[in-house]
Length: 370
Figure 1 (cartoon, one colour):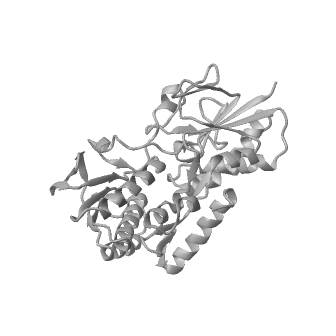
Figure 2: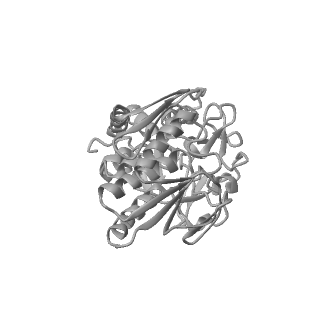
Figure 3: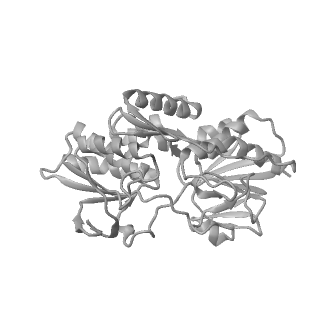
């Protein structure tokens, strides 16, 4: 009887797992990938897509062809629970997917807890929902004679790139849009070198984006209460407040950290259940904490795939140590970007071209038609 390897989620790390499985000869191991979406949108190209620089097809990776190449079955469904005793994953439609070894790469969930009323805002996650909603908003903004106000909550990389992309698209497509970013008391990009915020602010100002450096205290339909400034009206509110954990891994009995992310060791293996592995933004490495970023998820793919095969064949696992420093290339709206490497900050159209080559090459590995 074959062993069952179940991959939950089509995140960046699992793309690397499928790539490894396609190269390896195996017998007696059946592989299934289950995902709520039929394609994985590469997060690094999302701002470029929203700005109009890429089509959806250029930044999306269809999962079914990847599974076929890796000799794996693809199931489109949303997992909502694990039965860790029976080793079965349960889907929201009542489906049951058995496993001997399971790997989880579902990314972060929508944040609805850090600010009161966030359920009234559109979340940046899941990405597919944001993409489809933006398409509808483009039609709405183009068809109104009066300017519409957009407020993005969150001054980190996601919120900054998002508002820059939407502001650029609005200008180029003549959309009636007045964008703002509520960055918080820490200002823009608080975890990065000071020059990063200066360069991004310069570009946001040129795009007509209002930068509000105060905390959002609460959200209600079409309004954000801002500390020290009262209520700010917005026709559209988007929350980019950081990564949040899905509830079901903890509810299933997996050991999670204080924020709800699955705790894993250096083998990307659950610290509470050795037959469970996890990587990407849904996981938290106990001995090697690092930021929630696609850069780290991509790098985790090959060692994760290696350890899944080793666990199934009862061989020693390999250690994975994330890099201490990551390169960040932030889209600045147009075909222009700001780069960060440690304390170094650089910008310009050449940074965009560099980022563009990296992003296209990554997607092209998994989607030759992109």
